[in-house]
Length: 162
Image (cartoon, rainbow, N blue to C red; front, side):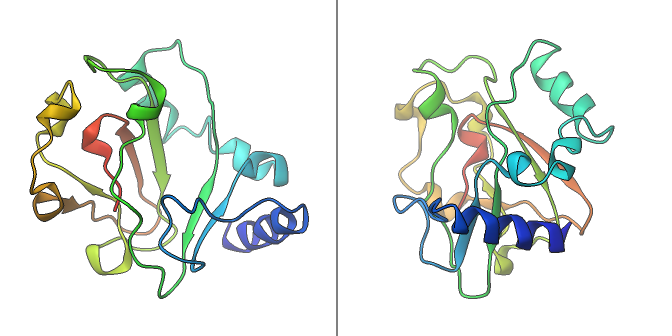
């Protein structure tokens, strides 16, 4: 999958698709590959993979839509992306239930020093932006996982990425 992702990234850039979201990504070392399922059908198989699909159904039930399949490549020197949570762009508060799930496939071992996804403990219960603590950056914890693991994370403030 690493080789296929590298090829998909090159095809995407040949098509003129930006590899960055400048409001989130720290520099050109953080590479995004949007619509990766269009670039290589092998990535579409991950959507219904028996390791991922039951987790999504557990969090969202059977009635869900796949709205985006992208890949993020944090090359050495990438740095951390801007703290954010995806639910804020999907639905207005109050957030009383999960509306979106991110499934993260670990191509490498993940830990804080190599840019692992981070979360804010307890934030799954936040319903508005006013619930966010001022010191949230200092309170975040990294998801740590071995290569081959998957993480299914809802888009509420618990899914902050850094």
